[in-house]
Image (cartoon, rainbow, N blue to C red):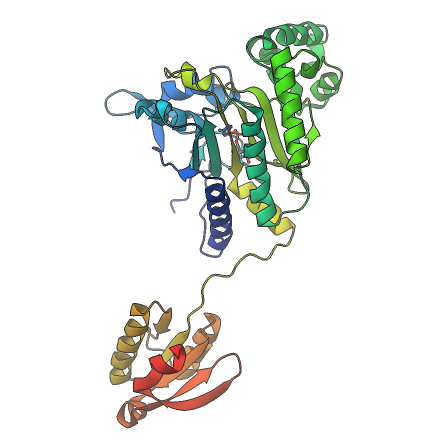
Length: 416
Ligand code: HAM
């Protein structure tokens, strides 16, 4: 038996309504904020993520699905969407368009991580990116878009954590302060953090290891090291969020796992869905477009993990919109009845109505059971006698009443 690859998921039909609910809600909200959809390839040149996401990040170092294609090019299945969207913008000469450029996407991503609840190797994101707006009003708008999606989904108990990680002007001094602080406790750090001390000291702040986390609590705080511009940006963001009634908490431990971030970073964290509780992560990345060979152009965005949102929706017992049910099911016995049934359901479908008829040749009893199972609103029973008389019983499944109608008038009866 060939089985799916570890860490991938089959989304069976009964799970699809959850995905549709989230995708439809996300699209609706994004479009209300003036975002247009973009679709980029599932795989890209490996170099894009090395340069975009950053060579020292866990994503690039350990988690990418990278392979050589038949032309010996190094290809990577996208681990995220931001670098691809930035590349597409540069490649299509869109960096001079009217600003801001506002884009959203619904994508699958691939990361070789240890699978657990809320973490898989292929997963799904809803993401938004805004380019050409360096003002903190843009940060506030992006964050408010994220919180609107969560509100519209009806998920309670999700907290917004915000932080600033400064810019290339002020971060080096903070980096040095962190290295100095953690170096004193080097032998209390986990093996990964010993490495991060050299490559990416900010990541020591969000290590889940108990001893590292205890040390991180006493580490120097980035907010004490911000330059005047970054500090001003962060305080304006807070007052804009206040005026938009978006509640948040400042959390200096939010540093994010990708290298492109500057200034604002944020996460929406859900209660009660286990260890993988960040349902949305994002931030500003004012250097990314230039890093990828484009002009200096500000950027900010986020991505939500759809599977994690589903866990939170289920955990909160939220009722999601039901999938459409057939208006009519025709139970038929005999080939003349089947022929008539096929022509009636086809006519109804032509008028935009969901209708079904028997395709299996089951007994009448089994057909009625099936009609009930698929939630048909009405059932029409057709046999040789009905075809001959031109009349049949139309049964309302909700009231269990039935009336005799001319078969020719079925559309009139159902659609008025
Ligand atoms: P990220 O934090 O790496 O950011 O991922 C965003 C979200 O994707 C996470 O908060 C989580 O909900 C979900 N996610 C990540 N990895 C997995 C996984 N293995 N299984 C299930 N869900 C996962 C980014 O990807 C950035 N591109 C976000 C961004 C956009 N920043 C600016 N613009």
